[in-house]
Image 1 (cartoon, rainbow, N blue to C red):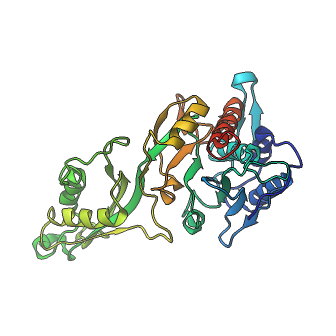
Image 2: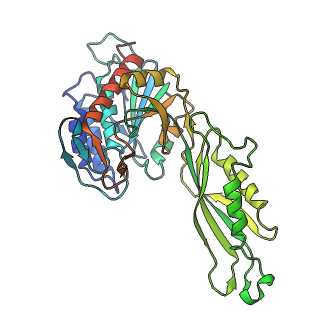
Image 3: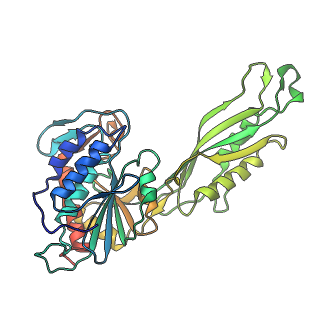
Length: 379
């Protein structure tokens, strides 16, 4: 990938977002990817699409190297585009407006605006900036998993309300399976009741973190992890001792916990809380790609300070799992216009999804200013 020699048209992030939100991307991202490639190449920059559908473009070839990452897929159902209001109250509504086409628009603005010395008119060697846009963040993250990037800094576009987010909890899903032996309920002592063993298993889930060696484990930015039982099922007949029971659990992890460490430790903890004649197995949900694990970046890192100063906003953790975990432990932040929820309720993934036009422009300005400081003419 290489940068082009000149820009052929001015880039307006809000005009791009207007077009992008109208594109239905909850089942197929082909049309959105075509719009993205068209937009990049209209600026005189070469864009490529790899075998798994990532859209990639680069400008400059010096150091430091910055990667701008976000995604173009959205959750179901599609929500139609609408633009309402004026001034600071003007919003763009529709699926993807804040998650994550608004952040994409801001990242594109910075990507096109920063001078990294790849034009014929520039003598500034500068650093380099790479745009890496993934196709399936809302599902399996096969795009992010396949990226082979080596950068000094990563900026991941998500709706953060213009705050710079330096950490996020991971999310692991798995199922505890308890196995017993069927018997007639009239002779219950002749069987092994897996559903009855759920009482001890649920106690083990509730006490898991308190029983850890670092009791309870906490992280200086993210606080304590959580473990929540979400689905339970077992048995087939009302007059039969059940030989099976399953409990699905949702884990929100903090560093340095990994998926494999958590799987083994939870299974062992449940084992000591249920009768010896009940079988215990815990397996993480089957995925083609690794789970989104927790990540954290030092809040005092140059990348964090530079982007926070440019945005004029605070620094905090992100409250959802994110593909930023694929880039950590390299310095990584999450940033963008829009919010996951407001005072009225959910925004991202909700039927009322929206982003403020003024925030999109502010995010674009902040990314541009930060990139100029990190890799461009401001160095």
